[in-house]
Length: 292
Ligand code: HSE
Image 1: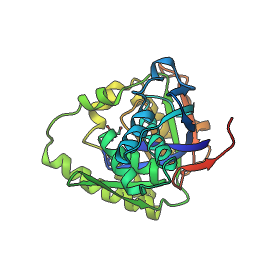
Image 2: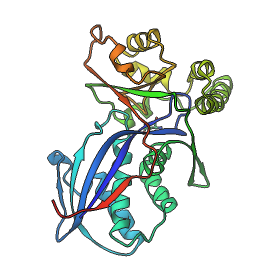
Image 3: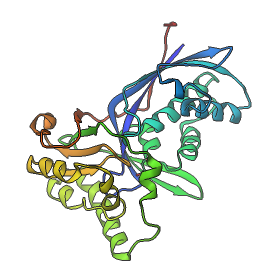
Image 4: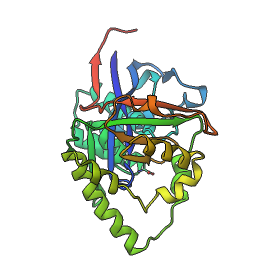
């Protein structure tokens, strides 16, 4: 049996819509072995079908390798679903890696990246889930490329997870089809400065290069408590407060490893869980284990 741990990811980091992503130390763990029929355990019954994203990616890799396999998979799900923390990317990456591992690793990580990005539709979460760390990705002629960028050690990441879901489809459908040139220029200049600030530890620039014009103004209307929570976090010295991926969670960058403890959530209309995270820096951890 193989055990695969794939991290949660927070995409966009505000101004990096569909480009930036970061892997965090919250994990889904997958236990996988070959089986005579498809068995999925550990998730709600509605996810126990061949449409489960893990199985979709598993089958996609098998098709590419010209093999057919059934599997038993048990999923320990710590990444909340439909909260903007990359649960679908984790499933795709785990399914693809499981199929590759059970087929003697015939594909390299770039090929896995291409398959998973095609399934997900954009590369940001997939890149950080697969390669780890902070990533900036690019699509060129339908192929994804990514670069990992070192984050200054002093920066700490806190995810704020509400008790309501938002589907990525819904959050993409509220976005406009076209933008003013000034807004695009603002985001282009911000993304360059955000990356440099995170890399070299420039707190002031990190706070400035954080004013997204592409998705947050439209999506924050879907997140009740957004403005109150943002004010509370900024008041407590957060450098950035952004929507995590397509929401509903949010992401704070600060220099406080216990940032979550400073935040008063009693005035909010929904229940929010705050988790202080470290960056997950490697490719997913794959181990061969005795059957459990
Ligand atoms: N970049 C994506 C979005 C991440 O914001 O829609 C969610 O999958």
